[in-house]
Image (cartoon, rainbow, N blue to C red; front, side):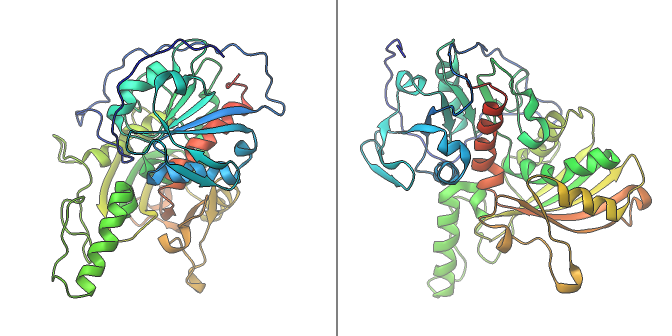
Length: 392
């Protein structure tokens, strides 16, 4: 493929997504245009082989994208895996089982455009600067962005493949991956919506340090040891608003005008967009807890139709990407410990709501933030696009 040369200055960036805009708590940010064009190819998706690139592969999410490509079918369809990084990372080798040792290339738009698919596991600012340039035109790459930069932009799909993967059609060049909290929760909510109809959603989250990326996990590990080793009475904090070890923090992301945090409002905005329920009331309280990995959520729903507990369990048991863990007599229910490293979201503690009665359910959900909430969802987007013949 011939690509025009594009000169860029090299940039340093981190793997942890940065807030890409200051959002009002009362509305979704306004749209701006991104060109959507068809990529010329004579290929069909039978035994298709793709050139795939990852920007930010040395961060927590980027590492998990590599892991997903190592074990999933889309990795078998990857003829070449390229890894792009900053000047600090360029030249280093990353060992993989399926693709061998890969040398990190200095990020360059022209080089990224040579790929069929690019996964962005970098900041929102980086994505806003480069995603359009990578994806635009017939010969641009399909870009799947893990940051918040494009989630609320009209015309750019925000996708959980099991829910709305059908909106990934030919000509779709830029796709947004949802926030981890939303993606995990919707895996449980969508089957229940199909069965009973969602009328309102109330959610409280218990979010692991992994939500703040590798730096967050490192701070939790280091500072927990410092307290246990009696180096200090109270842990230090640089990544989190307060010390996280032996504490919980009801503050994730910036507070908005309505006193919800942006993390909490993401659940509202993204639930409405992904499920095509533009007016559904959704209230979330997001709390950071001192676990290493996997987020949990206590969810209460009011439904349009009366609920049937066994029908709810059966729907969740059969839902793709969901594992029903609901045997309280044997102390089996969703937990971060058992959800960590798992592709499926655990759902349990299913019971009729004492608040909403016949038209309400309470449930508890745990899911791996780095997988279902980020890397796995991104790779599943690529898989559904391949299935829909959208990568050719």
